[in-house]
Image (cartoon, rainbow, N blue to C red; front, side):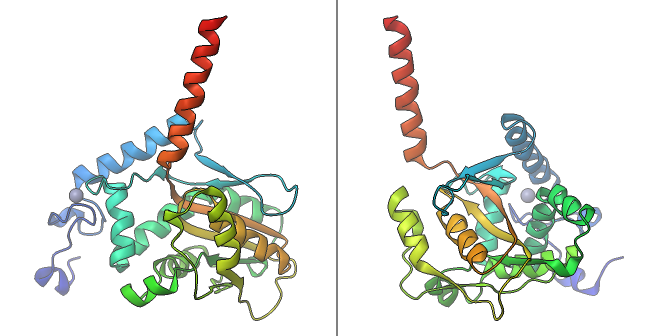
Length: 263
Ligand SMILES: [Zn+2]
């Protein structure tokens, strides 16, 4: 069925902006971008034993690392890749089709977790969805918190309530300019628990857009556990390899090669 609005505003591909042909009106991507998007996800899965997961340091003293499943690698600067375009559009416009695409993707990433929760007899009332809130300056600039929108869409999809449980403090620095240790300290100071009631026994799905060092997710996860959550399940749409990490690994690789050659 063609909606009247489509006659005046035919839907465009959310990645490249190309007008969508009529048979693709219900989709988010044009055929070409859809194919690239599937390829990007597929290669990410192939490189990560079928399920891409980022290991992040626990903020609990001596706690085991937390595992954050995600869907694809976000490459800053590569605007033309559909997966990057999706994230940038989500942050810049947060429009309904884009939000809905992201919510669908996240629901697929955590499908197994949801199945386990349900199988273990937890009722949906035992689970909550929350999100890493956007920095206040960005909310002011763009007028919305994109992850709040994603959490609301995800809530509809999974029939699990989405609740704002975290709040940014005013002075939060932008994480991307900070190193690993500074990020950790900044993350710990920049958020606080903002739930109205303690989370006794709840399972909390904690959603974010991009996991870099995992400092925000780690800090948030601890705040939620400290507020009484039984279990926190962090999930991110994508992960980024920071140049510094890649550089470090290269140095280690070179070091191993030197070791090998010296044997
Ligand atoms: Zn396209």
